[in-house]
Image (cartoon, rainbow, N blue to C red; front, side):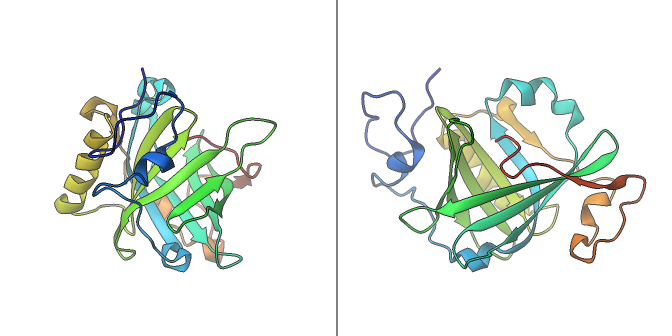
Length: 209
């Protein structure tokens, strides 16, 4: 089923592969934020995600607390390390999002001829939350990150409104747990993870929306 365009955007072009970034920039009140990349640096926690991903739907009962650390190695691109628990171990997934031609837009290049991932910063105040849009091919997902593992009801309402605006529903929205405390370990100090083996690194670009 084709993805719904963002709210108040002009009618989608005939091509079914119209990209999210093009829709966002076509006008209307929903446009990408223009944050300085440096303002996105630091620790974030994945609070919620909306997606039509069938794998996510089938395994939603296995969701684990997930944290990310963002660094800006060249002042423009986002180097993102995602830490998540899998099979009792903490895994680190490294990704590098390159800046697009306009502020607030980034691209994760595909490997081996695979499609890349477009990422748009939809809304953020830098200090407490960030709402990000992702598109790979015709698949769109929306993620809510917080500087802490829990956000206010007002921020959650903003996220849920944006989820509905792109045609995703409540039963496609997943909320990540905060239990266990392992995801709050100060990784920059390389402290050990209680009850888990040392982290393992995956290839840069590994992972999914």
